[in-house]
Length: 174
Image (cartoon, rainbow, N blue to C red):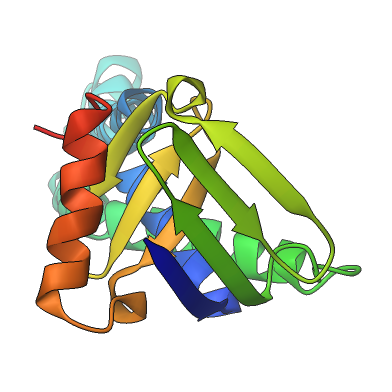
């Protein structure tokens, strides 16, 4: 099976977004950044109540609204901020070995991935897992890195089914 495709900055951004939305570590980090802050916001009026003897209801209601907004909107901000930084990083330096034309030759033993700068031969045993979303297959070679195979690179459904068959034969797709 042979595929030819162009990898763009948007493909790498899509991979990074997929990764941060599905990583257990990132989800834990997001949880720890999302929920303690509202507790701190809500503790301020109670601390003032203890120290002054008067409960500042206006301050409490303001912090309650702020807390609700934080819980609702922080994940959107987190994803936006992370993707902005990834985008900036992709704009630095020469990325010719990542972006541009790619060729992907898959067989029962593994695959060869070629780009403008290099050629890599990878046995299927060198792939930890495969994740799929609506537009891509991600062939993870470690916990944070993956080969990106856009679904748009398949000329037809039968080519994609052939690719999935090869992945199943390698024990990477169920």
